[in-house]
Image (cartoon, rainbow, N blue to C red; front, side, top):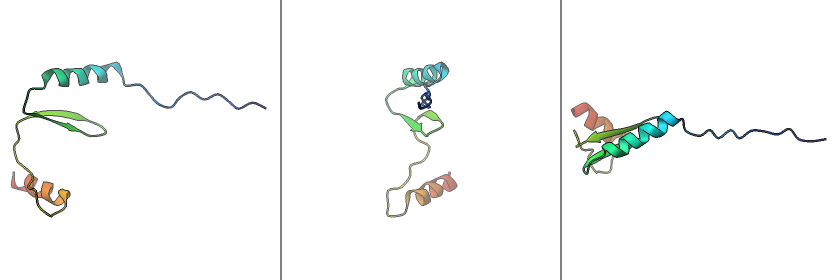
Length: 69
């Protein structure tokens, strides 16, 4: 009895994703900000609103900053 062979379930990034990542790095300038999530990576310049540093949970502070914008 033999076990069936399995292919790896880990997928390599698509070539377009690699090109997009390189483009973001090329476009980066000092002072820019990256936002990386499991599904997106964004590059922004400057900041429109700062999230205050206090004892409230981060989610509440972000909601407050977005509501005030």
